[in-house]
Length: 381
Image 1 (cartoon, rainbow, N blue to C red):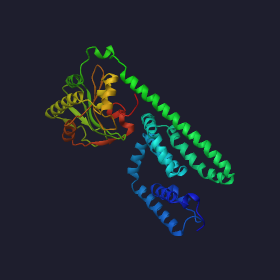
Image 2: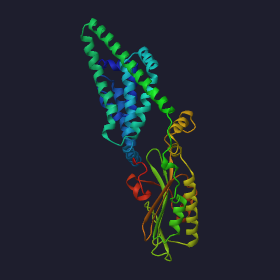
Image 3: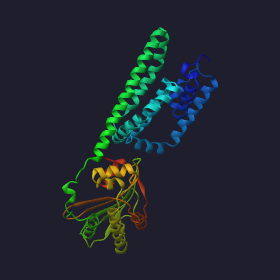
Image 4: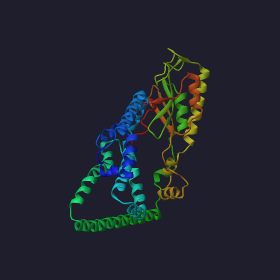
């Protein structure tokens, strides 16, 4: 086995290489050339790669579902990958003492920038532009070794002069970032003390019927088709729903039901009056429960800006990734089509639907969100 590259001659380099081989052997195994690694090491790497690919093939259905969800989380994946690449780059370029000093000086700046970057990247639509963040450190990684070789060839006095200039540049950059952080902090406190009055539109009386009343009016009307759906919208972009669709020609005609999520229902399956009354009673109860429930983001949106900031800073309300329950009711009447949607807990309506129609909660494909729920819960407004 010949001399390995300088990166692999250190414990840090070997650690990161074998971590990469464990996580993504399909890529890193090709770097295990015969002149750098022993036959035993290369054989172990290829055996792990074969096991890795075999597991992916055996779990292809599960992997396919995860990849489909991954398409809608490009920004999150690119953010995590970019953070790892930037951290790895710092370990390759700086010594341990420099890293400690850099952390102590710039920890507040990093926190401030993260508070701005992370929300922006998390809201970014799935797009190739999301990969700019990890692409920059990836390119810099390729330049580390050539720069090291170039430094060895030039005069030592020139290297010392360059080091002094780089230190001045680095300190200037840190001071600039601290100045930006101070300006941002000042603006935050200034905006927090600014008095803002709520808009007049929020103080006007609401004349439109409330959600439970609209649901009751639809169910009491001469509808020809009604779809009732309870859905759990997870923060990892997967929806689980229980749904039933009711149809009738006239108010006195038999009511037939179908299961839109691909589950087999008896042909021309009818719903008796007792079961229909039970379903509608629980639907109205669920409408009242969802209407009365308020998620933290809904509460903050209803408050004046200064009050909302105060509640966030005090920790009275916390905003973060969470699962959201949704009730969707759509109907067709002779006059128009109606779509009623509200967010909040709907139990036990889901259990009622599952019991009466012998169905179960199932995953909804992203392409069926609008067809089943009436809207895409993850689409930007």
